[in-house]
Image 1 (cartoon, rainbow, N blue to C red):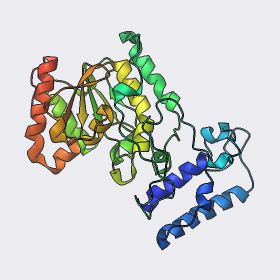
Image 2 (image 1 turned 120 degrees about the vertical axis):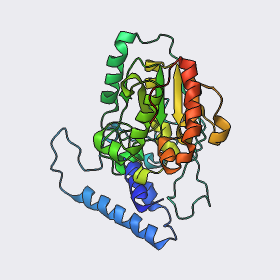
Image 3 (image 1 turned 135 degrees about the vertical axis):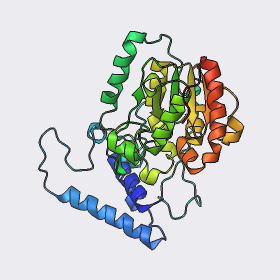
Amino acid sequence: MTGEGLRGYLEYLQDLGIYDLYRTPGPTDPELGALLLSVLAEKTRAASAPVTSGPNEPAHPFSSPLAAKAKPETSKGMPASTLPPRSINPFTTNSALVESAEPGADSAGPPVTATMAPLSFNHRAPLPEVSVEASQKAAVLQSLPAEIGDCTRCPLAYAGRHSIVFADGDPNARLMFVGEGPGADEDASGLPFVGKAGQLLNNMISAMGLKREQVYIANVVMCRPPKNRAPEPVEANTCSQFLLRQIDVVQPKVIVALGSTAATYLLGVKQSLAALRGQWHDVRGARCAVTYHPAYLLRDPKMKGEAWKDLQRVMTELKLRPGTQS
């Protein structure tokens, strides 16, 4: 893990009230140890500085609405700071979460680790008993960003993000694309798939005989991971609650998972794209096809033909006529 990523995790953990992290035996890596000490020094200075904020403002830069509402808890004499953080809601954490340290997994990593196995979207929550009316879908989706707010639910909030990238497209779309997460262009604009990979996705949509405005586009996570790395399980599982709700509101007939990360979290399996492509999967009542992420196709243009085969299967399912290929 990079220094920037570790700093984000440390700030996230302190925001949740986990302070004992700094009292554990120090790492053997001198550079990592120095980073831990520097972060601790920043926290100490912030804690000792005079409080100049107003009555409704955070007391220091690392406070959040979640931290302000948190109340100390104890269990059988255990100090509150050693308790695991409570999940924000039933979707926040995976039921297969293992909350135990894994010695030797990363000897130079943070002293607290957790392993999350994938959990398919079909098993995260029951399907809604009542569908949202077509005329109400836009309003329901527009209410979600307000609920998300200035999100601090996972470490990506502290990793240098500029925008929370929600989604884009037709609330009544029959076709939905799900990618991995925002890149630099998306982080700057606040819209998904607007960079070079987004331009290629637009061409793919056009080749299917559709316009971008006729489909719905979202990502597994809404905040840009540092250096465009793949989302960590805690990040993807935390953010998936909102993607799940978008799917349940839009109720597309077909979902296209763009790349292995999207496929892993939608389907709850860790398999190669070769094993997942060429067959239909079920996600929240929609038929799901797996294909290559546009960013991968930019790196390996030879695979565009294979991706086009996947999209042709989707077109057959939706009875679409090919448009102008680009």
